[in-house]
Length: 215
Ligand SMILES: Nc1ncnc2c1ncn2[C@@H]1O[C@H](COP(=O)(O)OP(=O)(O)O)[C@@H](O)[C@H]1O
Ligand SMILES: [Mg+2]
Image (tube, rainbow, N blue to C red; front, side, top):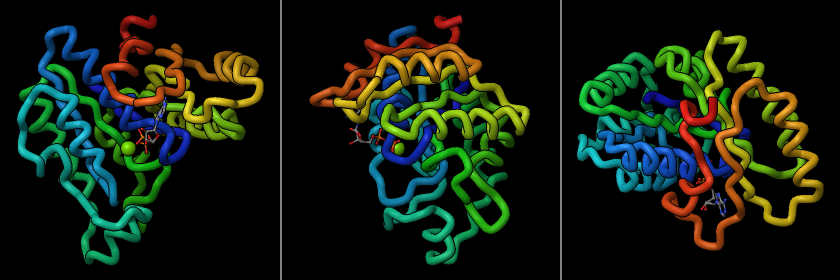
């Protein structure tokens, strides 16, 4: 199982869902590892390492780390670093060689720049991994989800499934929004994660299916 978790935005639950999917893979008895190719000012790497069951070198799990919580291409430029997608692909292949499941978490949304002439979508294309789209259920998310679907399809990539994550507990017309997304997203809904008072991957996993279970 290889998946690339993207989202309608930053802060929509990609890390929570990626960690929950790792938990589901472990429940199957698989050796599972998370990867965060580019992290800027977040502790996603620790969350993914904790959710997996393979102790692999951190520089493979997270080839690029920047302290500041800012757009990754700006963080890289300020640090004098060029994010090399081929290097990330090489790290991914090394992780992949020893794991039955690899869950890659993208940085921010699908077209987040990773340099002057490259973005997160280019990385997804290079890795050629099916995508899972986390939709942060809030006003505006339908447009963001559909734009992301188009960007995925136009790169010839597969949307393997999507997750409705209730980041805004009191969202108006939640069911109608969910129905609108179901009609328009050409991929299985892997689950609806409710707003969780203490959001942890094991709790979130209860609400999710792996793409192969959702067909
Ligand atoms: N279903 C949920 N219920 C409650 N809090 C959530 C839920 N999903 C995400 N969160 C919280 O929202 C924040 C952003 O989630 P995170 O997974 O880090 O998003 P991303 O990886 O897309 O930036 C975190 O503090 C997380 O705990
Ligand atoms: Mg994250």
